[in-house]
Length: 283
Image (cartoon, rainbow, N blue to C red; front, side, top):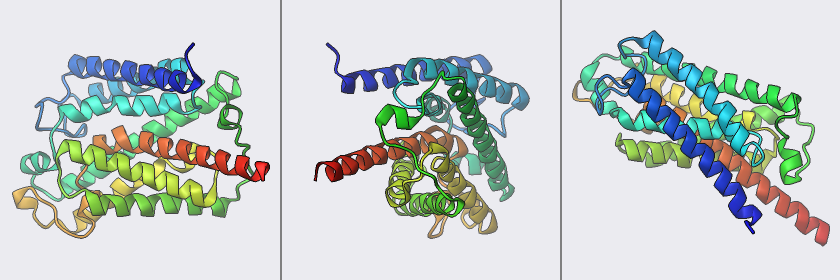
């Protein structure tokens, strides 16, 4: 008999695998990127409208399919799995250095800012879709899945949780993201997003993943604006400064790993919260 532990991880793994296969097929279909291994920005692609439309449709189709598979694991599992599916597009692209060599102007950071804003809107739409599923009882809220009852959170507490997520995520990225290597940027974004969400929820126990995953994308937008205002090293494809690590991951790197890692950190913190409640009840 399959244990609950293995069932949960098995269903989520299947959802992630399906999302990766879907986005791999879509990348081949629209030939993203146009120069594999070099151009990692969606905003600079030829036939941008077609590729963006395919990405949007594919993302929401992935959410529906992934939620059908893993929605019983976590309410937001479909959104997290679909975000991880974008890693296929990120891995097919290049690094920040290749982007700066191709577009050696400070305005490229503004393009990256707006591309990341596009992904933020994409995930927000996905989150809204999950709200519709929950209201129609196709998904259950986290409180019914893990037994940690929700609480009435005031606006100030939610804002403090989001601010903590942003600060911790930025600090981890600034400390560890010292290279624009794709594997390192993906890993650093994942680590930063997880730490930020886990810390924020542990301090404020605000319910709802929506208060945690946007911060990972906001950090990237802040990093791009700072790089735009101080474009040192642009001519040689490098970026300098204390907070340079915030701008080294490309927008797709943030979108692929940030929200999913933040959701994982939030889920883990809820497990810790449940353990604390159980300890108090047993005392």
